[in-house]
Each structure stands twice: as C-alpha cells, then as structure tokens.
Length: 136
Image (cartoon, rainbow, N blue to C red):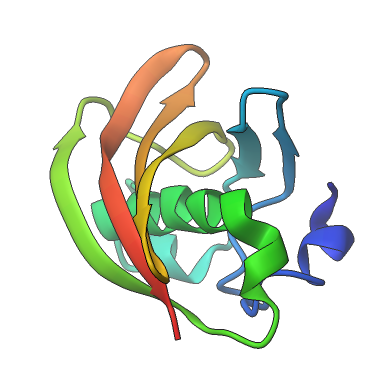
C-alpha cells in the first residue's frame, strides 16, 4: 500500500502520518518504510545543527506500522497506545534516513493488540520494542 491507500485505514494525517508504504506478507508480518524529511517538525529543535529523530517518534513510526496489521478493524475506531515495553534505542536516526519497520502481531485480547516491532536504517537496528494499542 502506498501513502494514499494508507489514509483509508489510518486516521493520521501529515505531519503525523509516519508510514510511506507497507506490505503485509503471507505470514502476517508488516514491512513498512518511512523516509525522514529534512524539514520534519520534530527535527527542527532536536537538535539545531545536529538533527536527530526523537525516540518517541521512532516508537510512533513503529506503532502506526503495527496498527496496519489490523487495518480492516481500524475503520470507525481510533488507535491509542496502551503500552510501550522493552524499548531499546541502538542507533541514531537522522533526516534523509529511510526507516524500515518490521512488525508482527503477537496476541490480542478483545480490542487490545500486542505487537513486536523493530526499526532499522540501512540494515542497522535503531529501535525495537513491544507495543500495544487499543481500538476505541
């Protein structure tokens, strides 16, 4: 799916739509990409002259990719974080980098969804963690 197709499922819009494209394979694993633009609002002040993508934004990129694993259930709902656990930051993400996200659904409980996700740039792990969200 491309960015315009994603808008049919995710309620996010620019500047907070943080997935450019996604494919979900036959095993139900999401493979998404997002390229960090030079003028992203979250890089302007973090840090001037040395822009770095904040960790919370990396988590949001992963979370949006996770939500698309249940894309057919999203319509009519809002996706809200219910937990962020075991998150580790391993390498810096900068403007110009293309984030490659791998996400898989681990379990569900009603309208709660539990996922594992990782974010890599050029094959280097930058962030990983266990994310959960609710559809409300």
